[in-house]
Image (cartoon, rainbow, N blue to C red; front, side, top):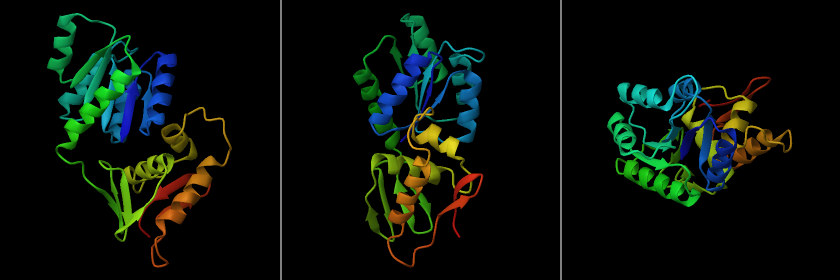
Amino acid sequence: MQLLIVEDNSKLLRSLQQGLREESYAVDTASNGDEALEKLEINTYDLLILDLMLPNVDGWEVLRQLRQDASSIPVLVLTAKGDVEDKVRVLDLGADDYLTKPFAFSELTARIRALLRRGNKTDPPLLTIDTLVLNPATRAAERNGKPIALTAREYALLEYFMRNQGKVLSKTQILEHVWDYNYEGLSNIVETYVKYLRKKLQTNHHDKELIYTLRGLGYILREQ
């Protein structure tokens, strides 16, 4: 599942990002409303975690624009305000749930699971390309009807590719989405995991290549 966290407190943002990635979620982040709206326009997310007090465009406006554009993405609002009036206003604007700061991480993850279950009642569409099928609801992948065993990181990488079919993804974009954006590990971490994926996606010698390297640009998932 792909989540977008919008929070201007950098310490809290990093903590939530790391914690949710350890729970096997793919996580993008934004520190202001403008950045959030830009990412929401470009990418497809399963859930938005939205702080209200943001610089430039605040969380109220982000939520208003989302619902004005008929977006049905579940929204969990984080607010430092516990007033009933503010909670009512948030829900009336189209938020699905809210959590008052400070909060326990376990409560946040419980609310995320509840919102995702609620959204799954409509069964999210399968992601497909060629004979490869990815089910975001069950996190299961198969090709030619054969299950593909993926680690949490491999799954996050494959889901990111499949949600962005036909788009060139740079190493920086992949690192920001699948790993921490300040990832300090090996410089070839992306190449290594792409290699793992390519190998696992070849369930037999007839399977077509799906992930292509564009030298100097990044990678692209597409049919041959």
